[in-house]
Image (cartoon, rainbow, N blue to C red; front, side, top):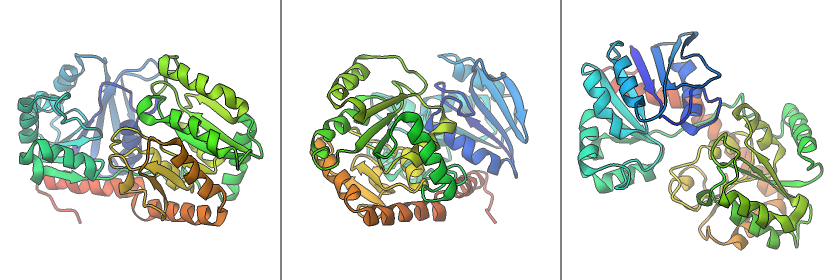
Amino acid sequence: MKLAFICTEKLPCPAIKGGAIQILIDGVSPILSKNYELTIFSIQDPSLPNREKRGRIEYIRLPSGKRYPEAVAKELGKGNYDVIHVFNRPKNVPIYAKAAPKSRFVLSLHNEMFAKEKISAKEAEEAIRSVRTIMTVSDYIGRTIVKRFPSAKNKVRTVYSGADLSTFIPVWSKEGIRIREKVRKKIGAEGKKIILFVGRLSANKGPHILIKSLKYLLNKHKDVVLVIVGGKWFSDNSIDGYVRSLHKLAKPFKKQVIFTKHVAPKEIPKYYLAADVFICSSQWQEPLARVHYEALAAGLPVITTKRGGNAEIVKHKQNGIVIKDYKNPKAFAEAIDSLLSNPQKAAKMAQKGRQFVKTNYQFKHVAHRLERVYLEAVGGILQ
């Protein structure tokens, strides 16, 4: 079978600049390419050739911008692909289907791309007709599609993401402990209790709430440090109004808030190992942030918000804590305190989280679920 993956026009593949979609593709492509011919389309980057083969995977990188879909479509016409997997761009599916009429199409959605402000009813219905399956990263995203377009109900299917356990080694392992101490020394947080945030610095992600929570937390835990990993937008470390406001908010806490700026994707796992608690403070209806899989895989107790799909994999008081009062800094402080004050409870949650990923949310599991979708698209049967 010949497969094609079509990335969005935002970031290159492999995930040299991050991106949940690109990281997912990096995780499943070596597994899928053992049995299938795989071509990955993404945008160009100065550090990558426009065309290359890595093992059994072919990469075709095209100029970014408005002409990207047309450039991809032109290439598709040359390929005779059995299945074409379009990532997060339902608007582009009809363009690609016209270029490759004999191919079967599947679409995966990582955000609310069927919302009114993203796509017209006419465009959406055309996209739905053009695909065999619409995979969503969470049940939440699936519900948003069906609510607006009941015609999609029989095509929508949740396919959860995952993590690479060989990359996210557990914090309690010998190697994990060694890396932990090295990173703590690097950021100047030796002997501290580290609360970790990883993500874009935007109001939707809520790091401002975490900074505000320190006012309550420091009364009991004076050795706490909040480490904020991320830039304004993936690899972009420029300062906008919101980032400026975060630094202003953090100023009274001095060395108890550490901004690392953007960290290269391959270095991110080391920061999980340095932490004691991981927090996803999403304020918006989060589709289901992949940082949850990463933190669970690294063996960290996780605190998240009951927004969007987050609570679908973080189970309250089992492998983490789910906060309903997500706008309240005090609610975060109380959740953090409950873990820092009960290390045995925190360790138990962390171990359950690691096991949760190990049993069903490694990239090999994700690849298997994707393979099932692809074979169903062409009428095949998974052995």
